[in-house]
Structures are given as structure tokens and as C-alpha cells.
Length: 237
Image (cartoon, rainbow, N blue to C red):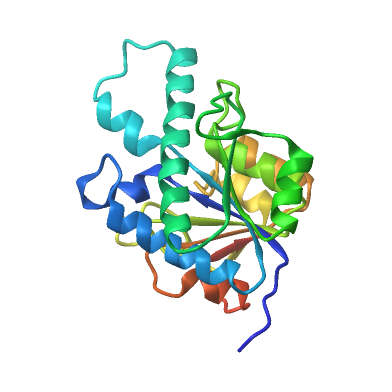
């Protein structure tokens, strides 16, 4: 078996992944499958931080949000990430994983307040830490929250799980001629306007020399393959 390539990782998941085929809400089977994959990595001694989006809840219960101002809309989205984080925590703990949810929004009944040093200490003790509530501020996506938390905890890499197996020149579900990139530079991502993460997140990673790997989270061994240096997905560095 290969030795893991990373000591500490930040896994970024979209909320839509938890919804499964329904497209909204939380599918317990999908959540359990994600928890199994994360546990397999943590069992290798790798310190695991997680940031998960909230689109499965917010878009699911608000089909038409055009009449909602941006700031309250963003706060609703942050609260949705807390719901997803608690659901994932429950699935991880059912598998015997020691897990903490740390939130940028104050919700003490469900999560600890996010304190950088405490989060690092949890990771050092082998706990899986789920960073919820985005950045705690409107106008910032969970992509940006993932980049920020990864930098703060000194993660070796951001591993972004998506519905496709890497970064393409166009949406492969729409354009059959879209080509997959195996490697990209941050400059190429910005110049080509590729949808790896939003511009703020990509810029943060570029300035802090933090690589990103984008892969298909549905793949059976994808996450373990990445930490074992098997070349899959798209690497941005």
C-alpha cells in the first residue's frame, strides 16, 4: 500500500452531492457513503478538515429567490451549511469517527464557534473537523470559505469533490466536445475562466501556493487514490 502523500487535507464538497437523485434535501444513503470515504482516509492517519456547501437545502426550499436580498439570502445559505455539516457529523460518528463541527456563525447548540487554534488542535488529536457557516460573512462562497480554512489550518491541499471527474474546457454534460485537463496552473484557470472554484478562492490558493485537486466524489476509491498519489481528476497548482 502506498504511503499517504499528505498530512492534512481540506475536502470541499458541494451541498448538492448530499441531495442524491432528488436534487434537494439530504439523502441518508449518500451521506453514509461520503462518511465511509472520509473515514477511510482518516484511518490512514491523515488529518481531515471538511467544508460543505448548502445548495441542496437553500435551493430546495426556495425555488424562486429573486425577491430575496443578497445579504439575508447568503445568511440562509450559511445556515444550510450548518445543517449539512451536522448531518455529515452524525453519519461519521455512527462509524466511530471522533468529529467536531465548528461554525463561523454562533449556534452553540449544534456547533463549536470557529477558533483557528482550537480547530488545529482537534485535527492534531485525530478528529475530523467540519467547518460550517461559510466565512460568517455575506458575499463569500463556500469555495472561498474552503480556501480560507485550508490556509488557516495549514492544509497541504484542497481536494474538491464534484459530480464530474475533473476540470473540462466546457460543461461536459452540455458540450460533448469538452476536453478534460489533467493539470492546470492557477494562471490558466483565471485566464480561461474555468469553473474550478470562484475567483476569490482561486486567487487565495494562488497567493498561498495551495494546490487543488478536482475529482468525481462518486468514484469508489477516488479520495483514497488521491492521498496515495494516484493521478486522477485535475490538479491545479
